[in-house]
Length: 269
Image (cartoon, rainbow, N blue to C red; front, side, top):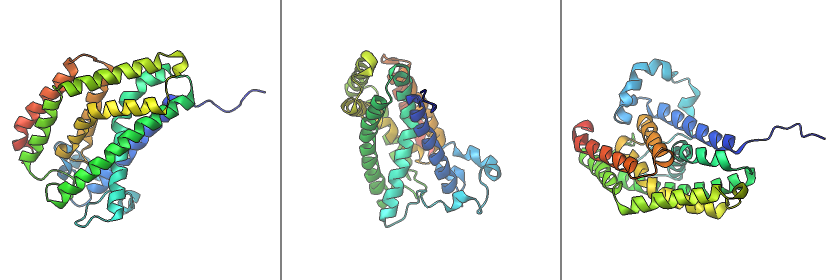
């Protein structure tokens, strides 16, 4: 008797996480723009203010009443910590998974192994989220991060970008990228992806966190609700992971960060 139920390809599970990540982030951005407009959310976001009436559907919109959207407050409650964790988690889904899926989807045959590998990978990044939330709490409680989740001092934003730019040229960055690529190739080229498991996903997640984690931290400088910065960083990490395996892409991204840092005092003013 033939199975009448369609087989779910692993790629669709990954894409579902990516879709949920961007959908949740979109809700967050629209919710955060209420009262202040999009321009308060970071450089480049003023573009959406031109279409504010079309993007935001008014106070009657369900988005306005979403309790899961992050709002920062002077005294952080359990709700604030939970909302911040969800914000970072869905940001990881939206930005990191697109770089992982192309190689995996073209090689893996088993859904179970794909899910095990993905679980280990995401577990590492969720721990990274916890660290980011702690940084967010420290910055906000000390007045260095606004309620719109944007660094309040241009010199500090410039410093963050400069440090990340320098990191792109470091040996730690290069070694982590080499380790990440070798691990992924060794896993997916095995028969049926037999080496893909929870442990391999965890190791790969650690390599990716060391390699791309600093780039994720630039969101503090651009604004945690800045979807334009999110999109640009996603493309950069996708190119770095999938299209260029040498030092050229890493150095280019580092150069861009350093150049932007040099002009950020005026940009973020």
